[in-house]
Image 1: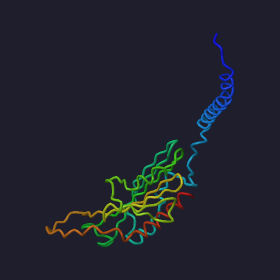
Image 2: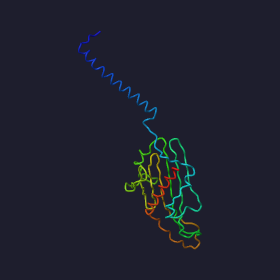
Image 3: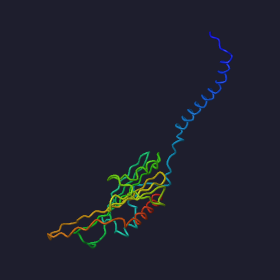
Image 4: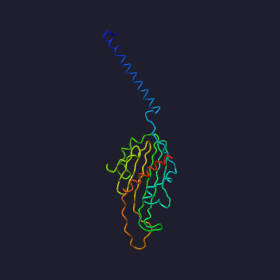
Length: 229
């Protein structure tokens, strides 16, 4: 048994309340962390802002502004679409063809420009897509565009960009709460039918799509409204 001086006992007594207080804080913090994890208070669900995705969404898309400037939807009425549902996120894709009637209503042979409108909507229900939206603004299916290829746009949502890969492709990408929307426009020169004359006309150039920026914005706003009905 060792002897303790009065000074060392006094020092221990003065230190113990601080140690117990620190221990209490650590225990309380640990319990609070467990509570936060258990009740998921630290990870709130993203705000879906009334957006709803249905199987018929693609066929209800009007594209009023783009069809007025480019031409009507493909007369076949075919809309390529797909939809997936998952507890974490619902996803919708549409591809709609616009066909300007440059060669006349009944023409069945010749060059034409095929415009394709792509719509992509992701409705996030468990995690906030805003964390990565800004970081991925320059990333596209065909590669990473330069900084100048991602132009910020106002008044379309929390964040919005016009993505330009080249003169024949444009994409509007919008973050609105827990929803990420994309409306893209691309153009491709194609030939229809068989030319028996032996002297096929020269193919037209792929148009510059910058002229359709306003129409794309108008149709994206209309799409946002329809997805909330």
